[in-house]
Image 1 (tube, rainbow, N blue to C red):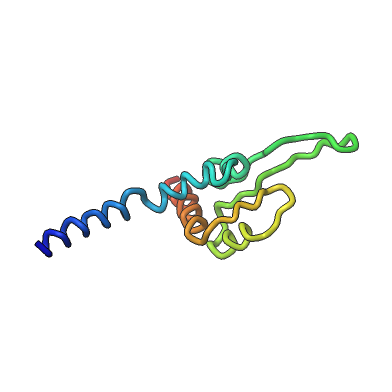
Image 2: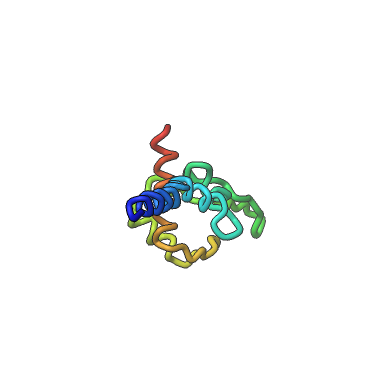
Amino acid sequence: MYRLFLLIFGSFVFAQESFITSIEYGKMLYENPRGIGCVECHGQAGEGKRITEYYHKKKLITLQGPAINHLTFEAFAKALGENKKVMPKYYLTKTEIQAIFEYIESKNSAK
């Protein structure tokens, strides 16, 4: 009976842990972490993307989301923790940051 319990419980725990991979979780967060996705400004694979153009004092200004697909994990995590003028603060956990980083890396290693 005890072995049956362990078998069932162990299978249940394994199923919960393997329900979604870290990369799949990172994709979900990258596309919509807290209302607006990273993809909107940083592109499909973190390559950077033009957000908009506007005129200020008769000068054309381009607002560009920077490339984030070449950063080390340390630089990536640090950038997410800093206050930016345009980028919203997402208050991501370390696990969420790691998952997003792994997703971006997976997109760029597939090329």
